[in-house]
Image (cartoon, rainbow, N blue to C red; front, side, top):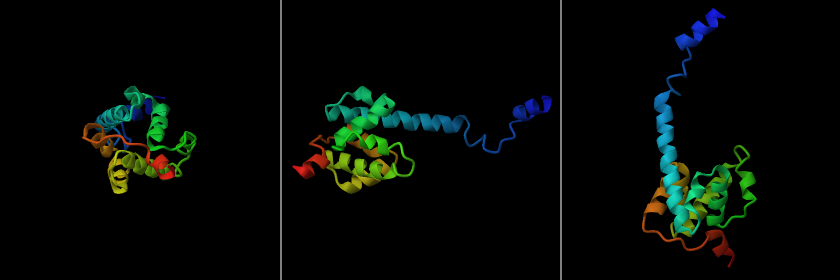
Length: 136
């Protein structure tokens, strides 16, 4: 028992530096940036801004803004499959704000949601969901 305590106190895990305080602070900053971007973007789309901080509800609202059905939320729960609706929704949200599909793909999906900050704080107006505009 004493040897296990000594091992724990010596912190011999090689990954402990990677997932230490610095990593957690970085992750917290990214989370705050994402929440700010989603909050402002939700408000522009006439949705409640506070929905950005409610874990599953925020994805449902994002689907609503993109014009996708609510059952797509199930697809977000399937590992690896969730990448496909995430890309499609990012592109549809960009189109709903009058931006190109590449804006949605690169800025929203690849660069960690920076595009949501640009849509939320920029001079972009919410028009209508791209998926619904295609069917109308």
